[in-house]
Length: 206
Image (cartoon, rainbow, N blue to C red):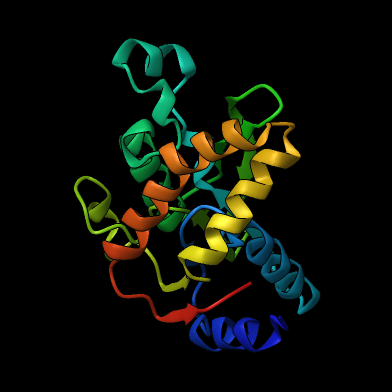
């Protein structure tokens, strides 16, 4: 997909703004990270300063999830530090100084605190994650936090194919991959698609 029309729309809406915050939401496997990176690259090519802020950095630690009995559901809405994420989005939006944000290290399955900077001169911040538009408490406190929102929904059948392939690529056998996908990822995808707030732009695929 050519991201130039989306970049054009963002630039048009951001005219005159010192900080413009974009939500890129959608179910697991929708292509949010790919779109975020492509848009950031397109905006930088136009002379903008842009940064991607992934929601994944706010995963609860595995030890906390184990204590809560949520480790098998890691990635579900209730397995994130929503309060810290809300505070970070608010700080980014306020643009009153640099904001240090965590980054999720997939190789170690843990979040690294203060691993990336959103600098004051960064005008475009692309916030990327599954639950940015989820119309459930406490995620619905994000309503009004974004200047522009994009929702990607390729459809459940395509998501299932991608999510199964993701686990195959991680070395899981067929039955184990199906358990991972159907036990957590696909229920989360249904939850996102069926309980989302309205987005400014909906994409069928990326």
